[in-house]
Length: 322
Image (cartoon, rainbow, N blue to C red):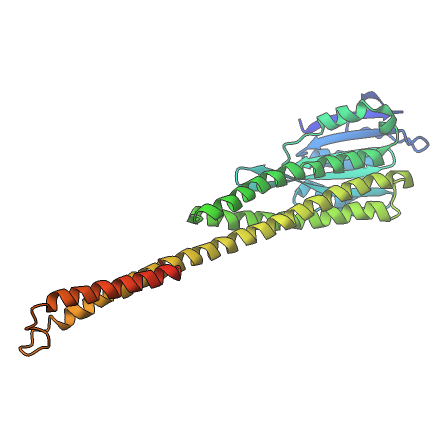
């Protein structure tokens, strides 16, 4: 059954269950309304809701797809709001959708692909009758706030992984798998930003615009949703910068270590070149060569080699090449 809950509320209290094809209209009392929650509804169920509550065909079509970015549309005296849920599953961010139809006497939420149900939220609101009695605009705020609050644990988990990579980079080279993970996280964050931008725009419209079903007294509540979205946006921007710095820092360290190894090899090559050159000269086997007949020539050559090599070693050591 895709209908999770469908109840009539009056003055902050649950009155009775309702059928999705039952028309409830309370034009004179804002505190009386129907709140219906569905998960992956069938076309027939959406058709029943459309007929009972006069939902716009384009909004019903968007709610059935489940692949929309966050948006807010006005259809006569009704609102249609789409919010995107996000969750971290393994190494990837997965997305769901919550479409919300808001009328004077009804609020209908349609969820696709989200593992976080609204049962706990409904129970929390039912425990606060004074807030629930304010009407559907306050429930809309509660649902949007519930969706946006799910973003923060996701970003904090990614943040811990990124900071761990940053700390590890100081001590050792990043492996190929870790470099691939950096680019994977960066791609996931870019996709996430495509959701956060429209989400902030939706919250901003609910604050600034004159919209049906949204009282002036309810607008400050949506400002809290906008603040949460902007906070997550700032964290995502910071994570992208950290990822870039981790990759660049890793490259700089690798270049520095490679340069140090190159200098060491060059220093030892220069030192070893001295005995190699001298031995090469005296190994040419010409009949007439200087010092071949000298009784101390062998020891002089060894002394010269030792002195030059020692001098080069000291010089390279002082310059930091060894």
